[in-house]
Length: 433
Length: 174
Image 1: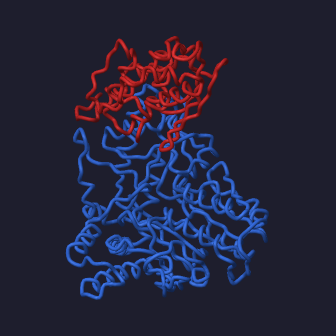
Image 2 (image 1 turned 180 degrees about the vertical axis):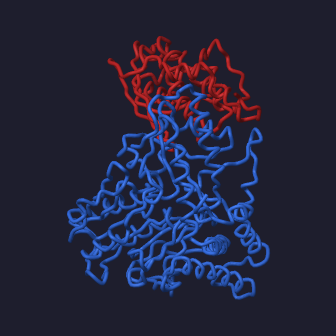
Image 3 (image 1 turned 30 degrees about the horizontal axis):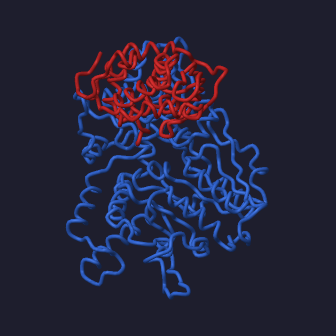
């Protein structure tokens, strides 16, 4: 099959969990990578090695282990900076996850007395100001902005969606106006799979002096993310979806913006000096990293992004597109299957949400699981996007760099089996939303 | 069709009785009169039920005159709602509370509790669900809603009169 990673079998051997068999002797078919990715041996080994041989706290220990741990931790930052093509390593901030990174941004932008974006000079965010998001956001890129709007009196607005799951940009000039202070959107939808024209939207946002926040949680795993050309002023992603460990996420921001943003959490590591009356803060990135950071996790994340870079993000994107196209073809052969989101692989990432007539998504996931096939069922933390398409929940299969066409075959056969099991083989043929 | 591995016996989960209730739910729809209406959701998956309770009689003598509902969810949650109405409508709240407690005990039993058909009727079909921890919440959605609604409808005293003998009759902690 043209477009697959040529070394696919070798790559699979890098991921020990793919050798698992599940109840009933079924080999694991892991199609839930948009939820969390599996981890290659090099990431596991790097974390174990760190804990076995180099463990100490960072930035404060004067002893040899402390130096080694600090170097390993900061080495993770260098690797992430390279992965993102960040102009400076200081622009890479470690958080707990992407949700925390978005909350940091929303909280800090709301606390800022004013910000000079280069294109506009703001006062403190307040009534009359607008924050623009989209209807396809993950809850983590909706709720923090709702909270910010509530706190400041600013108004929350959003892009709607077209019937084929794209952002409706027809009213972009009415939506992004002189009142717009922040535009926050996902690069790739975790539910619809849609790849958004982030740079185009950022251009419009910058014309009015707004700050552009990009949720790259689904983009970073499967396509090259270059923060310089992305158009983002601030960009977040999470380690556990890029074959790294849980417990660590990333906020990247333009230095000029980050330096004007007040701290999020106060505490150790984020200060320059503390007196009882007041404190001064450390420079970025440490200003935003209060407390002992996730050290072994940063080591693991560094190795994870290096792993993806060594395979090649362009090649991974091609692989995902090929597998996604193959899955879309397979789904089209099944009667009663409705795909939510774009129906061509070029327009989307490697997550496909779908409905099967007469069978609830939970029941689909349950029957697939009995055959060793792991998919997600539910609202995928995107309830508004589901509501837009008139569905309460959906099933979602999501592939990654280790997914094979044979696994897609098993998934399609599993779905056909599910329809037979529930005795609901509909008469309509598989067409989309 | 069933796989033999423990914990993955699909046919134990999807008993005929459950699929029958799913395809032909009993007492569906929202009806008048009612004293309380509640809306419960399962936040992890989005299953929802709007459930109304109509009680007749006072205090500990109250009777479940009607339970009506509009529900959206998987086969397990839909069938469980249907079975609930079949079991509880027409019973004194005190008795219904005992059925409720037995059903909860069964669902939290991890497949180790032997259900009593005299008490649970078609509810015994859910014994298999207890072996699938991820699905227990589906089966309990309507039952939690019923207890909440009955309490709000003025049935609290009757519920309490029955509850102490069943230590498992408490809110789902998960």
